Structures are given as structure tokens and as C-alpha cells.
Image (cartoon, rainbow, N blue to C red; front, side):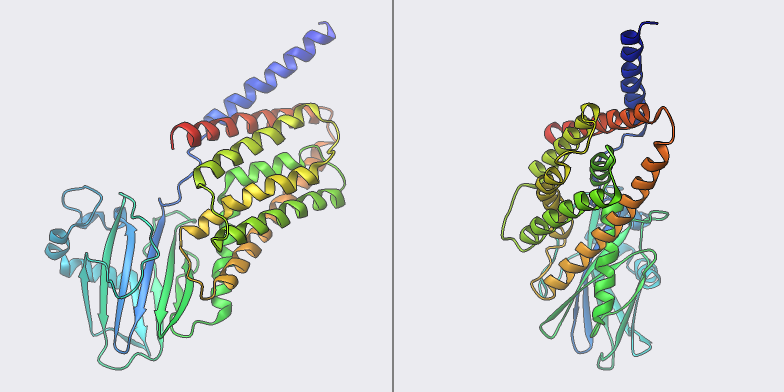
Length: 366
């Protein structure tokens, strides 16, 4: 077979296999609310109001009309069973004592601000009112109302007490927290974990990193590229989360998809990673706006905002560093084989197709 025909067939096979792989694995790129719950907690002398927004699927046994919204009538009808269920899943303990009384309503308390911009159609709002006979001085919370078998499920909590606001994240692996005078390390670790989780489940960001590293280079140069990306996305992450700049999340997500497609396409004709750190810095500014959307959903108060932002950013960098090392060693091992160029092209083609799918979703189906 002539050389040019052989080369044409190789390219065609790369595109065909890349398309097959990606289409078989393609899933919607955004699912922010699917496994997310939000709790706003107001602590007073002997009473607690807990505004809970939770996936209705977790309390589906009380949704009589199956409309994915728990109504007043359904809450009244199932008040006793609902109390027993939520008392098992959400346990508040003050100085070792459970509450004297729990009342559940559907009306959100106006005594505290809600960190929810809009409630998805798949979620229900509940007001849990707790009462103790003694003054509340120490308070522990155990939360285990998560989507079963989903490691990324979480409950984002804000605690309001005596003018102070604390932010916490409950996960299937971190179900217990102190709500009064919460240790700063508890809050920091919560947001570091949230940052790690966000980068590891942000498949578009992962594919962008893989594309950046695909042409190879010495580890020192790759770290320079990733450092440029980290610095730039940290800048826009902070600016956006502090509401200093504001860009429509839809346009940000579209730009992220295009940035992935461009870097992956460049891998098909570039032989050396020239000017990669400059590109990483430029596109990192866009990806930082994408990272900030995860925090903007929380609508974090100014109190402790810098601590939460810094912790979230550290979590992103920790997760990103693990991905970079894994990709670097995988590509280094791949170069030992004669067909490594074909495999890298195949991966790049797959990434191009995936980013094209994301672009279509975000531009025309959002």
C-alpha cells in the first residue's frame, strides 16, 4: 500500500475510533443540582430554623402525586412519618441532648436569607423547626440525606448565629460537624474537599489539562504550563466569586468547550509544545470563571468568604496536581511504543468530538 494511502487510513481510523469512543461515553456535561442539597441554619437561644432544599427523590415516599414537589397538604398528611424519617437522617444534638420538638413546614423561614437563587423543579423546600427546653450552647449536626451510591452528593450549609456566618459542606464521607463556633480547620477542609471534587468531576477541565500535556515535554516545562493555568484561573475565580466581574455562565461554558477543541486540534499538527504556557494562561482566565460558578451557586456571604475561596482554590490545585502527574507518567510510558503517536492522535480526536458535543449542548440546548 502506498505511503500516502496508508497515512490517510491511519488518520481515518483515528477519527472513526475517536468518534465511536466518545459517543459511547458521552453524557450531559452539567448536572450541578442532581445530587445537591442546601441547608440554611439559623441558631437562636433555644430554637433552630433549618431551611432545607433537597432532591425530592430522597423523600419520594411522601410525594403522593409524584410531581417532584412536596406540597403543604402532603407535608401535613405525612407529618409524623416525615418527622421520624428526617430525625433519622438529620440529627441535631445540643450538649448531648436531642431536640424536644420538631415541626416541619413547606414555607421557608424569612428570618434568615436563603443561599438559593432558584429552586430546581426536582427539589423541595422544607422548613424544619427545632426546639430545646434548655439554652443551646453546643451543637453538633449529623447529616446523611444523600443520593444513594453517589460519591459527589453533598449538602451545602450556611450557619447563622449572633451575627456570624459559617460555611460547611456535608458529604457521604463527612457527615458530622460542629455548628456553634465551628473550628476554622473544619471549614477549610470542607472547601478543600469541595475543590478537589469539583476538578475531579469537571470532565471538561480534565480534558483541557490532558490536551495541554498531550505534546509532552520535560516535567519542569509541564509544571510551568500548569502553573500558568493555575495562576490565571485563580485570578478570575476570585474576581468572579467576589462579584468584581460578572459573565454569563452560559457563555463561559461555551468558551470553555471551544478552548478544549482548539488545544486538542493543535495537538494534531504541532510537534513541539511551543507557547503552551501562554495559551494555558489565556485560557485559564476563562476556566477560572467556570470554577467560580460552583461557588456562585452557594451565594456565599462576605463573612469568611476569603477563607472559603482560598480553601476551594487549594482543593482545585491539589486535584489538578494529581491529574497532571497521572497524565505525565501515562504519556511517558506511552512513548516507549512505536504507535504512541497514533494513540495520542486518537485521544485528541476523541477530545475534539467531546468538546464539539459540549459546545452544541451549551450553545443550542441550554
